[in-house]
Image 1 (cartoon, rainbow, N blue to C red):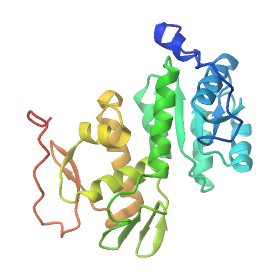
Image 2: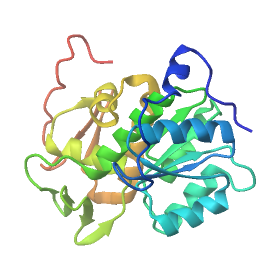
Image 3: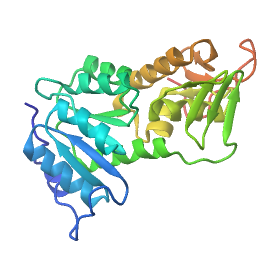
Image 4: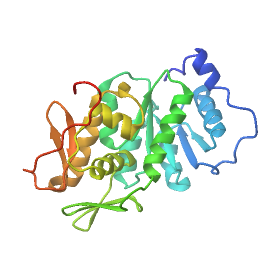
Length: 268
């Protein structure tokens, strides 16, 4: 069983949403499927997500989660890793295996980098570790959904060789063949392609793409970059700049890259 969020001042205030009627399920900002076997935690998440304007459906096991994602088609899934019988990692694996790329936010009590990396490699969009602030979870979920829905500015389609990234349709293709990316993978690729040749540090990418400081660690960025490269194959425009970070290129691979953006200090 997973421990509940701590009852510190922050968590206590976050667990008590603002007064007023809860939104109807499935309305407002979209339907969120919460997969959590601990009733107390599920109730806290339900209250806070409803207060933030989301419709909420709660199930307590992996099999029900797979059925609910198929039948309800939620906007996102908040998925506890530590479920009995069919755990969250296996649920995510089966979702992606059947071509379901609904955004997934992992909730885990395991402070273990291996579990987090496995989840990200399977296609999870973000994660949060218990004990957590419900307000932080709602903020993280909002970031995942913004990446999914996208805010298009500038060209609607970005291209690099045979690679095409359609910002309006949220589709990626290589030589006309569609490539399935998670919301975070898509946003990372698009962010780099919008500024071809510009080198971003991992900390910059965590801030620009994930929307929070480097608390998740640079490994999160590395895992997502590796996943994008694996899916795009030779068409991947993402280039590693040793000891600095990553850049996307549209020019030939031997073209020079622009200098890193000034952070007010030396790069890591």
